[in-house]
Length: 325
Ligand SMILES: NC(=O)c1ccc[n+]([C@@H]2O[C@H](COP(=O)([O-])OP(=O)(O)OC[C@H]3O[C@@H](n4cnc5c(N)ncnc54)[C@H](OP(=O)(O)O)[C@@H]3O)[C@@H](O)[C@H]2O)c1
Image (cartoon, rainbow, N blue to C red):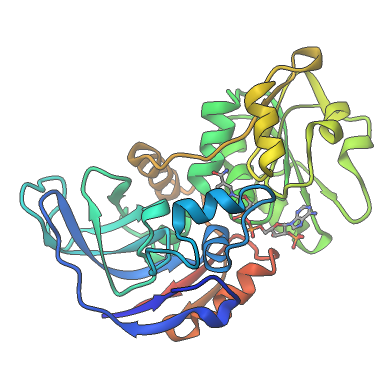
């Protein structure tokens, strides 16, 4: 099978196309013919070795010292079940499925094996494989931070800093789904996108600093990494929560060691887990027309280096997809 392989950290040129043996499903696993996978922020970080400040050593210990031990990146995938390992009853041959494999990766190959008990779910009728590959890019992270950590509720005033990327576009829509009033922070070029996704107000970060405007929010979700508590504090309502999706080691330690701050403020950081129930919920919302996964560009597998280069600009709108069929 064709696969995009990375054996050492570096620029997009380190990604090579190789012919690898087809994987075989073991007991409890399914074999997927992958049709589409997202090229996510995690993929450019794992390809380049560029971790958030302070996390470089940990990243290399976990992923590999000179390059990722698991050379096939791709944390999401959408395709078709083509073989079942012993004991798998949740899926049948031919099922259209999508999955979030996170650190196990494997989506940038024509075939991949996934444990049937992991974060894998059926694609609803009418939903394309591109959309199915894009939904797990930012959706599970936005859900985890807003709902499981942020306790979002109807009527909350929510600010999404970095509202036009993979996590941000999902966060705007999910916050609206939970009944919140959403303010989005983007560049002017992405204001229309954020409004279309449900933001009632859009702030252009090139002209306005949301933190010093005098408006206060119950939840502030930061996907950019430029919103430490010291900056966010004047913009947090009493009892408000700062949800640090993207932060460095110091920001993470601050959230773990001192989560409670002035005026009942809470700070949350960490890594969103992958859960099958969340994928199922996201797919249900997509099927009901309540959630879309904006797709910036679609590349073919032999254009994977260009896809990495685009994602690494950190200016993608929603998700970038690579097609493998
Ligand atoms: N904690 C976790 O579990 C977790 C999970 C997923 C991702 N992450 C991290 O979260 C970060 C975001 O991921 P992502 O997939 O959403 O990234 P992304 O898709 O690459 O985000 C790109 C978007 O960020 C916007 N942006 C760039 N600079 C901005 C600024 N100064 N203010 C506001 N918006 C700005 C860009 O909009 P403009 O073009 O309009 O500037 C672009 O649309 C990454 O660092 C990723 O590693 C963490």
